[in-house]
Image (cartoon, rainbow, N blue to C red):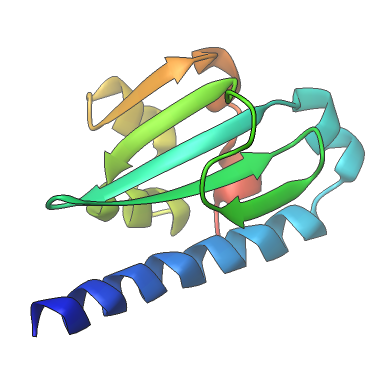
Length: 119
C-alpha cells in the first residue's frame, strides 16, 4: 500500500510540473530569458525526494536534476510546493517564514512566481 501512495504522490507532483511546463510555454519568452538561470526544485515528502528543473536560459522544464550546477536550488515540502504553485500561499511568505530553503541566487528565486504559479 505504501508504494501505491508513493506512486500517486509522484504522479501528482509530475502533473504539477507538467502544468508548470505549459505555463512557461505561455509566458513571454523574452521575459523568461531576461530573468534567466537554472532552478532546481527538490520537493520532499517524508524520506522521498522528487526533483525537477526549470531552465529559463533554454525555456525548459523537466523532471530530474540539470546537467550543470543550478544557479538556484529550492528545497521544500510537497505541501508548501502545492500551496505555492496553486496560489494558496505567496512564495515570498513561504520563503520568509522559513518553510523552504534556497541556495544560490535568492533574488532570482523571488522573481519566479509568474513562471510557476498555476491559475
